[in-house]
Image (tube, rainbow, N blue to C red; front, side, top):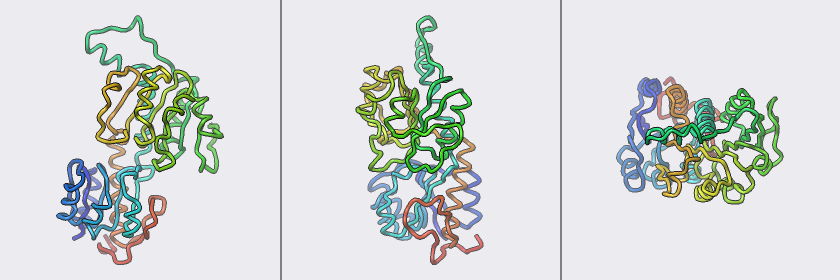
Length: 331
């Protein structure tokens, strides 16, 4: 019987049912595992597949599980998977492209509104006995310019939400062949920083985008502008962001992801009224969880059955079809 290891808790019930019906044995870590503890788990369970919700799949973890054939990300960010190690071993790495796009886009919008209207700060103030009606002023999103960096499925959904609020949408995506109707193409990332009232990041994390937002970039932003990051935490230099927020160089920020997770906010960020944070829950809705779980588990079952995984979901150079199926092809 083939084994699927879920890094984290069990995924959506329909996806778990799909695994059971395919004859898979499913085990879960139920929490973040790292280092020796993770390697011991892999040695003990010897999974044929991993569905990654929490933590990372390291070179050492792959070494500990020589039967491992596919790593399916329960989401779209794959920077916590050692792609070089996977390529060396011929392990397929797939993501659930598009499955969580609506939920993440809605969460980005929620952060935008929370920062612009000071919702988290005012909530905390009321709970501590204050009433700031006479002194607080927020800002409207209507009529403002929304800058979207990376126009994948999430960015496209957010663009539609922004337009519905009456925002002008400026997009920077150097690999985008054709700009959708109703949006403007930025000629450079710097143009987005210079012209946009809200900048929302929706690009992958790689060596060229790590600390995409740092001291120089915050200096280029419009006074009062808002930064939103629901993509990968490493896109933002958290120390530089803290300085920009404390100095009033930018108006605020909303973060759902962090350079290191679980995140511990530095002391000088915890009390900033213009920072709104959430614990990487942009995709954590009932609806997205079901779509993502089914997408990831179907990729695992297809691959272990010898069926080709759609190239749309594959992010590395491993073969997309397993030469010797682990599951019956009818699964």
